[in-house]
Structures are given as structure tokens and as C-alpha cells.
Image 1 (cartoon, one colour):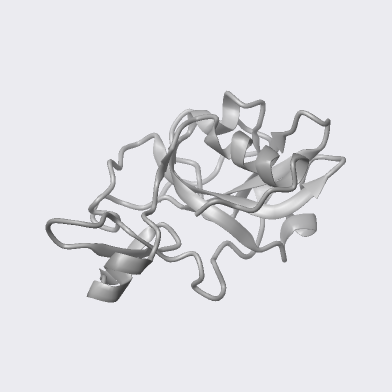
Image 2 (cartoon, rainbow, N blue to C red):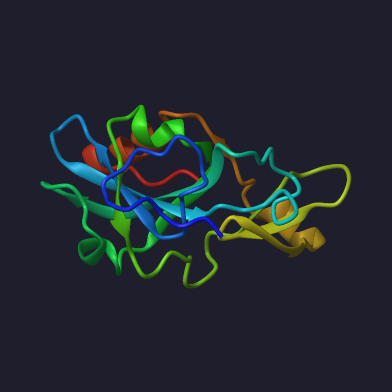
Amino acid sequence: MISRPAAYPFVPKSNAYLVPGHIWGIPLRDGRSACGVVVAVPTAEEAPHQAINSRTFAAGLLDWVGDELPTPTAVDDSPLLNWGYGHIKMIGENGGSILGQRSSVHDRDGALSGVSHRMGGTVGLYRDGRMVRVATADEARDLPIIGTWGSTYIVALAERVFVYGKPVVR
């Protein structure tokens, strides 16, 4: 088992030191900060429809914005707004670093479940960064597809929600 680096903050170079619940600040254009969270660091077996490697992880945007950087205590009860798979570049290249670890990481009510794809082959039902089972036909048709986020997508999503007041797109 790999342990976390000795001290926060740190900018990850791979997903080796990431653990669910790690948080980072997302600088917004209005000077405030939003908060990203590591939802999961799944293996290829846990996320068989995703391109999993040593630099990918399941990232989430929390329903939190503040004038200061987020702290684990400040964001501990903040719900997850959306999540997707991304490269660790989304943390460091956007001015963030891992600041600590909150105690809760999961989508508490399952509302952010999604599917791997729509057509052809086995469609997976995903929750909290991992495939939980094969999706039913209704789920495969109705649930959103879990996306792969580019390195600046989480910033754009946070600004859409917290700067411009628009709803989360799923």
C-alpha cells in the first residue's frame, strides 16, 4: 500500500498518492475558490469501460464556494455536484494542489449514477467512480453517460455554477 506524502499541500504527478476524499481548490475568475474532490482512484477492473492508468482518477466538483481555499472541515458536508474521469493535470495545471482529505466522498443518495455508454456491448452502471453492476435496459437508456473531463473542464463547470449561476449539466 502506498501512503500519502508527508505533508499537505502537494501537487500530484501520478495518482499513486491520491485517495478518495482528497480536496483541492479551484481558482475562479471572480477571486473565489471552488472545491474539487478525488471521488475514486479505480483500477482497470473496477472501471472496465474507462482508460485507467497511473495518471487518471475519478474527480468531482463539490457544492462549495468560498473566499478562501477549501479546508476538509469546511467542505465535509458539501454534496457532490458532478463527477467524471480525468487526468491529474486538472489539479496542478489549474493552480490547485491537494490540501487535505475530507471524511466523506460519496454521492450519498446515488443521484449521480451514470452509465458507461449507450449502445453495443455490456453497459456498466457507475457510481462513485466504479462500476457497480451491469445497467438495466432502462438505466442504459435514461441515465447520463459518465464523461471523461479535459484538464480545464472542472474549472469551466465550477465557473458555470458559481460565477454565472447556471445549473450543472449532466
